[in-house]
Length: 195
Image (cartoon, rainbow, N blue to C red; front, top):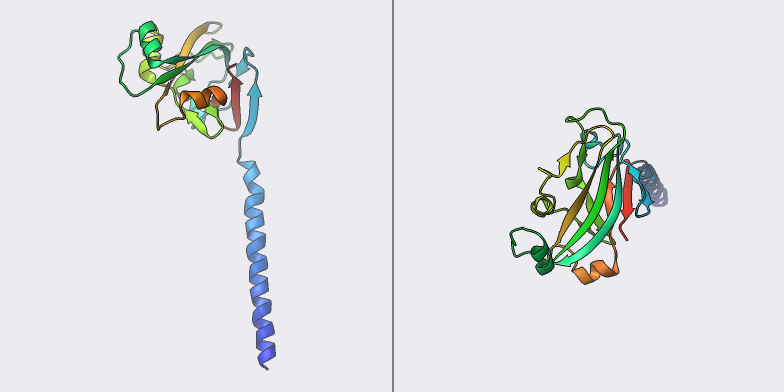
């Protein structure tokens, strides 16, 4: 009689473990549906934003393209000698990426545009967001990091990323692990090589 109870309990435990395992498998099987598809583009290649976005579909830049033209890493001292900006004393270096943004087919001028403040420099295990204050210092003719262009026009701008010790990797690590410029995250993570 005791053996029958033990066998019954063991059978129930095995069934519960099997059901739990099947559930874990089913949940993990579906995760690939939600992960962004990673796309890497060469420096100088014109990349269309298409219907990809960063945070929500409302920040889509459909009809626009972006192209990496140049990049440079400056010490804070070099940066402030070259540009008229107030040193906040936090960043030791600035990574700058020159891009060309073009409105190829977006007719919603003033309503839809490019939010360059949503871009990031990403490397192995790090991401650096752009500095809006330094963006304005380097691009004095640009009122903000988000803008729209007239249909068929293009604009060259510098994106500026602050390297702050303790907040991001130090500049030596960034030199060794060259970042890429991420322009969208979902459903496609679009990364542009900057070197």
